[in-house]
Image: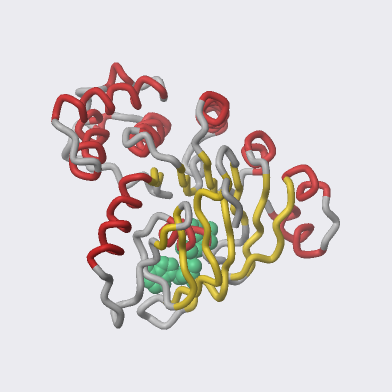
Length: 255
Ligand SMILES: Nc1ncnc2c1ncn2[C@@H]1O[C@H](COP(=O)(O)OP(=O)(O)OP(=O)(O)O)[C@@H](O)[C@H]1O
Ligand SMILES: [Mg+2]
């Protein structure tokens, strides 16, 4: 781990309550300004890894650190000290997570969805939360939809709002789970362009889970291939896409 490392997982093992081991032993890190793509077959543990990195899911072994501070959520057998609990809450507010199925609140407006993080995660006053929400919506081109209902929006618009909600806390790292998988080719191109612009305009580090090789090629600096809960390989994007390693070839030929 270097001084530039933002988020790091070290030997992380995650067993779901039903006994399924989603992550066997994953070591992974992201540096400042770095965009890392996490790829791999369905069920290899990509979404689980993002939840662990966001501090939302417990782990059964290993640890997760944000700029050197432990933010590991232990399994139920272990109680967190108040200090670690505070570090974890701060971490959750500092990480922007965009879920695979958006998980927007349908009963709230676009603006209200984006105000939740600043208001309750960062404990900002209502008018400050509103300003942060508006600024985030502006960055994704959805500021005119502030008062609209989530259910009135198209899939592409909902994805933009989900990204804005993650940006509203001005996170140091953005975690995106398949940001284009629910979209048609035109909307996909728009979201790729948006993410590309975001990486160019700000220093936010990003972890993007995606099956979309065009997206990976366009914005990732490095690719991590997961295979059955382990990191199979990690390579700079160009080398990954040109690799003739059998596991990478098997993935590329199916993607
Ligand atoms: N909440 C859960 N409870 C039990 N098992 C789970 C849970 N979430 C995921 N799993 C299991 O953990 C493994 C990894 O799942 P995960 O969702 O992380 O995979 P993924 O790589 O994101 O897959 P996909 O490409 O389909 O999104 C799978 O075997 C899955 O069935
Ligand atoms: Mg997934």
